[in-house]
Image (tube, rainbow, N blue to C red; front, side, top):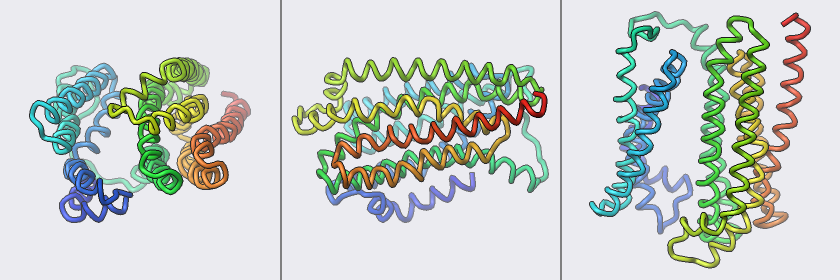
Length: 346
């Protein structure tokens, strides 16, 4: 809540300078500021929703967490349309639908208190520095992963703006939006196996730990393969959905970028699983390394250097290359961990 209030304060006092800092141009500053103000003011609800979802999923109620996510997402989609078009609220309407979705999710999640065998209860407790420090260490990789999306989008936008202007930024927007759906699926698989891996680790059932991990790998890779085939086969209608004005230059850039940019799926599907796996077994260092590499240390210099060297083709290939190199290092870390378990007789 304290973190959320800090963002709310920014939304009330400094939204236009923040929008400018994040790359909003003169033409888009008003719309960006409007949307950003809604998001920041309602930040406590976004943060609390993510927190409560994780706890309820781990409290043997993943079905309720799934219902909350599904209904809040559907609410966002449906009311985006209602607020923007029939009610003619424009960008404010789109923002309002987005910020109300975590409120609906929290209302649905509140029914968890009726679950008979729940372990979650509200009570006063002393702050323990050791617990806070350990939690922060294990959560740092997830924080970096979430932050990396916004930072990479910012850097991509700046590089593309310098190379080909607003059209290239719009083309990247199409690719980034589709990729976010794919990454959400991989994250969903990872969060699905996380409680199982954590529980098996606590019970020292290492055979189960690796079984759940391999299961997550299989599901994620299958999703990656299906998504890549869908993107290749249906790339023209997919781009057309985002290109209502039938801008030929925008369509050409997006169609050229799709097959290259989405090669990243085959690295990301494993990297996301491994990052959450390491956190689930209490290996914060390894999880942190994976998050830092794929979100910052590799992708940011790659997009700048490859963009300058190979123009747009370099930009599209920067993400697959960073995910691929991260995967090589992640596999090395995993092999080292498995060897340590074998030496300890697990």
